[in-house]
Structure formats: structure tokens, C-alpha cells
Length: 134
Image 1 (cartoon, rainbow, N blue to C red):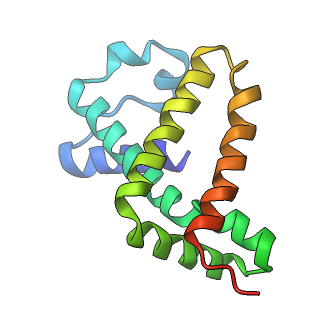
Image 2: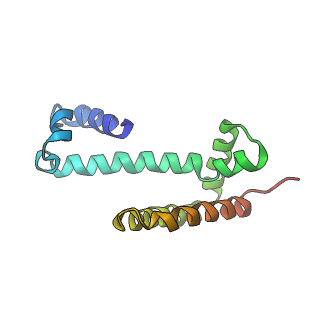
């Protein structure tokens, strides 16, 4: 919802009132109502939000589970891990996007296999990327 509202606000700020109404977007033919620049901006805003969420959460959940860390400390740790390992994190994020797309294209049946594998791989990435202190 934040993605949709933020995209609409940016479109309004940059181009004026050209975004279709929410009613028309939800119940009408959305693709016939939007331009290429609207779709592009929507994808750019969504990509930026996805990058932020990825940076905040890539190792946050395993850190909270493993070391009884607060949510804020886990998010800061996650950001430090992303900054320190940026090329690896770009590959990891791309793999996540690709595997989730495969899961969606398989009518969500692939998610039965993909989600546990991603969770297991995330745990191992956390163990390899974060120095575990006894």
C-alpha cells in the first residue's frame, strides 16, 4: 500500500494529476489507463523500497533469533552486512527475486520448495557474514 501511495505522490509531484483513481485502478483495466512513464516510475519506486527492505532485513531475523538482539540493532547489523558485502548482496537479492518469480510462475507450488531453501540459505549467509561471538 505504501508503494502504491508513494508512487502516486511522486507522480503527482513530478507530472501533475495524471494518475488514475484508485477506484479505476482496482476495478478497471489498469494497463490501458497508465503510460510508460507511470509504469517506469512505479517500478523504480518499488525497486527502491525493495532495496531498503532488503538492506534492513537480510540478516535481521536470524540475528534476532540467534543472539537475542533488538530489532533496531538487528536492522543496523543488516545494513552493515550489506554495505560490507555489496556485490554478494546484489547477487543474493537477484537470486531471491528470480526464485520468488519462479515460485509465482509455478502457481505458487514452487514456493513449497523455494521458501524453505531460501530460509536455510539465509541462515547460512548470516552465519558466514556475521561474526558469531560466544
